[in-house]
Amino acid sequence: MQRTAAKTAFANVLVNTLIANVTTSFLWFALTFWVYIETQSVLATGVIGGAYMLLIAFFAMVFGTLVDRHRKHAVMLVSSVVSAVAFLVAGLLYVWQPESALLDLGGPWFWLFALIILCGGVIEQLRNIALSTTVTLLVDEDKRDRANGLVGTVQGLAFLVTSVFSGLSIGFLGMGWTLAIAIAAMALTFVHLLFIRIPEGTPQPDPGASSALDFRGSVKAIRLAPGLFALIVFSTFNNLIGGVYMALMDPYGLTLFDAQTWGFALAFASTGFLIGGGLVAKFGLGPKPMRTLLLIVMAMGLLGAVFMLREWWPLYVIGMWLYMALVPPAEAAEQTVIQKVVPYERQGRVFGVAAAMEAAAAPITAFLIAPIAEFLVIPYMKSPEGAARWGWLLGEGQARGIALICLFAGLIMVVAGSLAFLTRSYRKLTELYANAPAQQIDGAGDEAAAAPADGDGAESRHASAGGPDADPLVPSIDPVTARGGRAGRDGLAPPSNDDASTQ
Image (cartoon, rainbow, N blue to C red; front, side):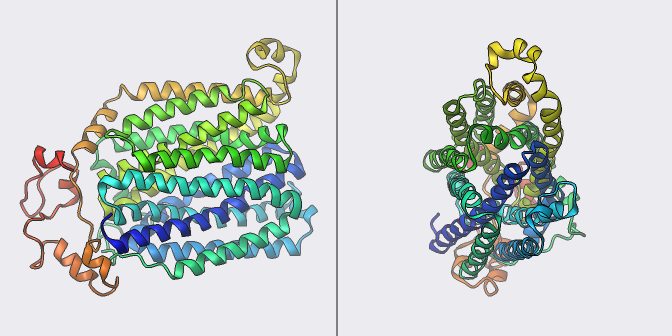
């Protein structure tokens, strides 16, 4: 990035996202630890995790439309306010009701308490979608993969902090003080965000978006990029498998460690996020991020298949560390592709569709795997028949049923990644990414960076749209032309191969 204002804004947004992610993840992890420790129910933790992803799936498309329609700074402020209010309401409910009522899985207070906390965490997805589009706004195209690596590093740091302090907080302070800490931290996030200035123009209303759920506009943007839908479907399938790990990772870890030690084990494993994100920030993803993504998915499947083969905590922790080191590059690859092949003014909706589809997959396996594991597979693996059939591969231990499920889930990921290399969609999207020209962003030029958002934004938009102040050497690019389709409405031809090769 060459613009000082944009660089400063991006750094501040990353710091603010770190605070927000730490806060929401802190309370989310704490809730999961608290429920499992007090109830010993794999079913309860699986339902909580599935409900979280289901809420994201329900609201993600609405969030994407809001991101496209409003300034990113305003969207982030709304996210902070809603989270703070939700956590405050949960705190009041905790004070009002005894813990025995809040932990009664058959009563209404447990589900209401969990739902309020989940809503406060789900709204963070609004900020994450805004952050993905902010990378496009503030970062030069050739540096976006590295910027996405920094985003992964920040998210990994948040996971590292929460992994330690959630377990410690529940183990030593209890749920009440954990809620108080989350409320105070989210208030700090809001205050910090008030001092951030993002150089952006006012988004132009999309005449084709008639409601808060602009599914038609999202589909149109996806169809303009051949192969993009296949990428989203593939990521959705991976999340379908990932729901297995979401439902079973904590129960398995808590059979090996107490809550405090499990928090430290997660903290160590989550340093993999920092390493993975840091490597992307340093070296990028290479010229073919789709190929990078598929190779990473295959490696993740292999790790998921083997890191529970024995009930040995070093194997599990090191396997988790390697698995988490691969998560930031995988997410950065998907985001980098979308940021290049989708018009900026529709990226929020496309990221929203992707988040909705990917999040909808995880609850399916979370809701299915949790009861299957608890009532079928775990008892089977504890029986003499199960031990005799699978003992040679999985050894002995209390959680061999969880290991068996994760073994097959990982192998499915390896096969899916291998087959994806052979698809037409992979070849077309790789070619589109290589040849797509840089797109212009209204209000994102040097003038917009130096001027107030409400001042020169309109002038900047007029120039970028081809008005009298436009640079005659910079052609106007409409979304279809930017995707390699027909010439723009102004009669400009798509870039030549020589031009595309310089992008």
